Image 1 (cartoon, one colour):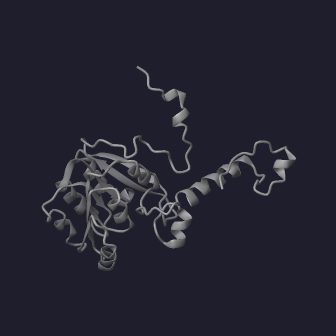
Image 2 (tube, rainbow, N blue to C red; image 1 turned 120 degrees about the vertical axis):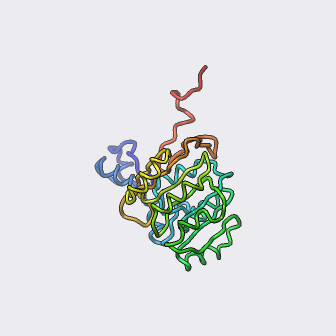
Image 3 (cartoon, rainbow, N blue to C red; image 1 turned 180 degrees about the vertical axis):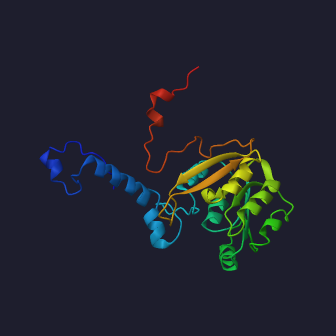
Length: 246
């Protein structure tokens, strides 16, 4: 349920309602924030089902919620993705981009991904000690390279730089754990943008970072950016301070 201040707490009719709880303002604000995380972002449901999902059952990567909302607002329909480390993210990308090539080091997980038969996804089983060399093997370039592999992410990121197309970006998950890798990408003239937030199935906050090619341009998927946020307050249609003028 939404948490808000009652119209009049002194009105007996209000105080006697069973769906209204009398509590200090601080406690109500905390309850509202917890409700957004638990129900809006699906944190509770993800834990119960052991699947990364939002409150409305949309499957998402195990990455920062703020990044996920940003990506959901982008038009990536023409993009091709190289995903180093598959998972719930594979389905997420498949729903938004032209094609996905996933290199996965866990053979069991790779077979699970293949069994889903996602039409625009190619899954390849690899090894942690060979994946860096295989990144360039297809002889292709990509608009997005996702570095989320169980292996040496520094080597993978270094190889990813060779296959990144102009106007694309490299995504480094848990970037706060890989400062050398982040520095490598940053000093390769990519623009680092960090998304620090909670994520599904984790009790602590993490960072997922985008490293944008200087020609990257954000294109809105639904006509506006940013989209109204989960648990946010959208006043765009009535905002008198946002009227377009000559």
